[in-house]
Amino acid sequence: MKTMALLVVPACLLVLALLVGPMILMFRISLNQFSPTQLMVQAFTPDNYIKAATDPYYQQIIVSTLGIALFCTLLTLVLAFPAAYWLGRIESRWKSLAVIATLFPLLVGNVVRSAGWMALFSRGGLINVTLLKLGIISEPLEIMYTPKAVIIGIIAVVLPYMILTIASVIESIPRDLEDAAANLGASGLRVFWRVILPLSAPGVAAGSILVFVLCMNTYATAVLLGGPKFKMMAPAVYDQFVRGNNWPMGATLAFMLLAVTMAFTVFGSVAFARRYRTA
Amino acid sequence: MMFRLTEQPSVGRVLMRTLIALAYLIIFAPVVMIVVTSFFAQELISFPPPALSLAWYANAWAKPEFLRGLLTSFQVALLAAAIGVPIGTAAALAIVRGEFPGRQTLSSFLLAPLAVPGVVAGSGLYMLYVLAEDFFDRDIKATTEGLVAAHTLLAIPWTVRLVVASLQGLDRRAEEAAANLGASPFTVFRRITLPMMRPGVVAAAMFSFIQSFENLDLSMLLVGPGRITLPVAMLNYLEFRIDPTLAAVATVQITLVGLLMVVTDRFVKLSRVV
Image (cartoon, rainbow over all chains, first blue to last red; front, side, top):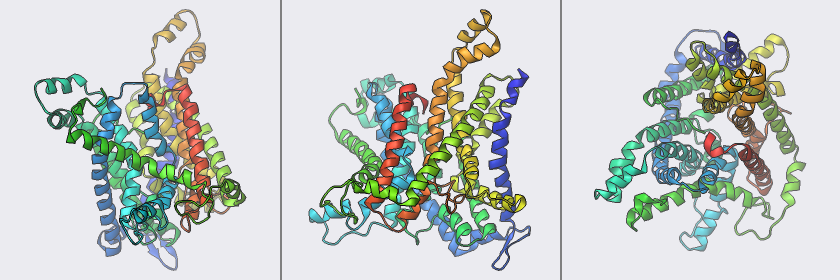
């Protein structure tokens, strides 16, 4: 069956040419220097990395990206867990429908969902109109182009990932364990705290890592709901290439984003042997 | 039976149901909202709408950026799936059925494109394309070929993951029986293995197509005048305004994705493959 091995060659060549090659090229370019007149000067210097770590402009982008990612991950976890428990425990024909319903918004794309939030958040949008009609507020709230809008938008994007990841673990926890604890007199809260939560820890961890990485790499949601002044890493990378024409800095920021993403992903897959990176 | 954790009415049960409702509200609100908005008669979105209209669905395709974007995205997604799914399926077959060392590593390697952020992979390809354009003296960025090449990076890992999963669940005895009854290896593959792989391959084709069709992060640095994918066209438009025209375009995309999911679900239970 030596010939079987040949079947992986085309896929490997494509990944090498279109992913590994460009990543090596990117790392090399991140060591070059930027010059406003010549654009890129061949060099071999860590200057761009030092600048990204020390310049307040980049520092602020990095800190706000990590902060938003962490905050969104925690909030998503709290929101997703009950839904994941529910999804993991359905045993009727509705199960398939519920999974598809969770998956569907994930597949319609981030641009479309950001557009939906724009219609909800704007001054004449549904949220403001409803609150005004109910007399809760007298002036329209400014939700668009604030961190609040971005955070809600990101949570909507990553919730399905967290729900599906945790639900797949909860499915595998035998119900008998919950029943046994309840029969022995544990309250609902105690069953949750002492049985369900510890047993679903691998799913919680895997889901949190996946979601954190996705939050960090947010592009469309940050650009559309945060506006031009709101800066996160992925839009900053794009700006370096398109507006600044600064390849070395763009490559540096992109490489940092890649390094953090890979570190979390590899840590996650090493720490939890099962592959949880579900759709 | 669904809420064994909280069978007695309690604060916990109420809290749990509230959180479930809130989670799904947040997931669905933007999708439902954009569909609703596409029927508003007024160009400036405001609630409640004074009247309803279907005019935006015609108006949307009068705008060249959306029509061309839709056609480009469709073409790129179709080609990327047509190239990536067979290549990925072949790799998956070798990983599950081959007997050579390092198959686990190979599998991780082929799944790696999923772990690399789209903006990062797109930046790398952008630089590669621009440098290669100078070298070969021909356009690569903002061509269909360039976009399709990039999008095979989406199709291959999805195909490897879904087809490997479906092959691992196969009962090999049917193949052994066919071989014992005198079928050649090729006949066994064509008559037994291939039909049994079908659900995995169909799911792979759907995911590859959709991932490509809705992709923004990987594509946005690789598009250019005349070759703009639909998500990039929508993003550019949304940076200036949100109106029912855009909502109509978005609704068409939502409908297309929904239809694909329903069709695929008839071949393969989506709740089992993800």
